[in-house]
Image 1 (cartoon, helix red, strand yellow):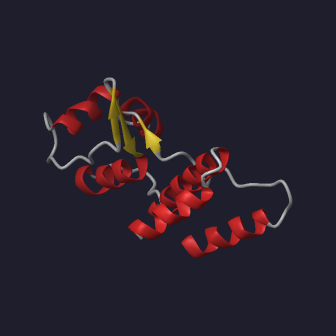
Image 2: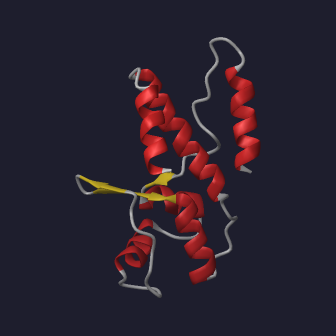
Length: 126
C-alpha cells in the first residue's frame, strides 16, 4: 500500500503547482469523533474504555494531549475495538494513516520553507 501511495504522490508532484495535502481520511480523532465514526458507541463509553473503568484495558494511548483534549489514532482505536471488544467496524489501513501523517507534515514543512530540515530529520529517525 505504501508503494502505491508513494507512486501516486510522485505522479501528483509532476504537475506544476500541484501538491498532495493528505491521504484518505484524517486519522487523528477525539473520543467524540471516534464515537461518531463508530456509530455504535458513545463518547462516554469510549472514555470509560480509555481510562480503564471498563473493558479489558490496553486502550490505545493518545497521540497528543493538550489543554484537556486528547487526540487518538482512529486506526489504532478501531483495531483495538475490533480485536479486544469484538466490535463490528471496518478496519482502517495503518499504512494510509501513516502516509497521511507524513504528507501533512511535509505540507507544514513546505509552508515554512523547511523541507530540507524535514528530510534531515526523517533521515535521522528512519
